[in-house]
Image (cartoon, rainbow, N blue to C red; front, side):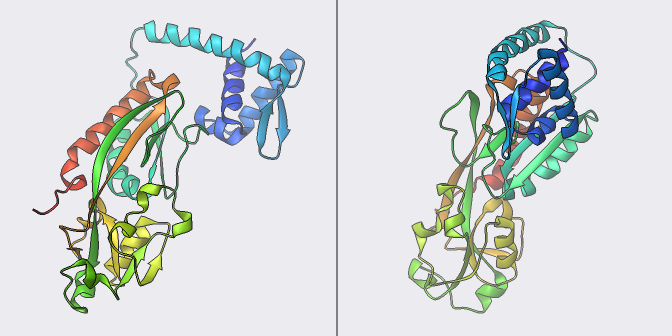
Length: 299
């Protein structure tokens, strides 16, 4: 029985869709479908039930899965014992991360890292929503909340600072803001409450209940753009706002928030060289930018 076909079977069983399995295997989804059809012909029975939402294991597929997983475990044992390859890193690593952190902090660094390893492909999912390891959406996930359960490796990546910011233009057009009470009557820019993807983003209510919003958006980059254009006040990550010389902190001693990024990956893939390399590089990248990530509150 062809091991490649079994490998495709295992990825589809775990991910549930042809597209997700194809992404992890770095092939086209039609290749996954063709491999599954070949395996089903060998086995002599359907292994998946095709449904609108994806592929569900049949009884025959459920019986086969633990046997294939045992073969996979044996292969990885041999792989770990084999001498290290001199061909460098190869394959695909998909990193899921929040939009602002992924775009501003990680994208330039990861692109440079990938250029050093021509056979390595890094997919960066910088999105204003949660990216799920459990759904096989990414290989490494950086999130605002610590994964609560599951066979995953979890590490506290870094704390980061958020502050209240407004543009120099906006501040020049309004009276001085010296206390929390002075925020009354100002226009704010923030998240859409019912579309928040994490409770960790509910920081504005800790400071002030806005009287009006100039803009609400699911995108932190859109919030930054609207703030820089002079349309209101917003809570922004320091790693975004401190790079923009048009912005000034508002009530820096009072409006100072700290949140945490957690990094996780499936325990079953932690031994892979490409996973270890990207994981370690992400930690090094964060360490090199700790100064802008973690601002101290004024004394």
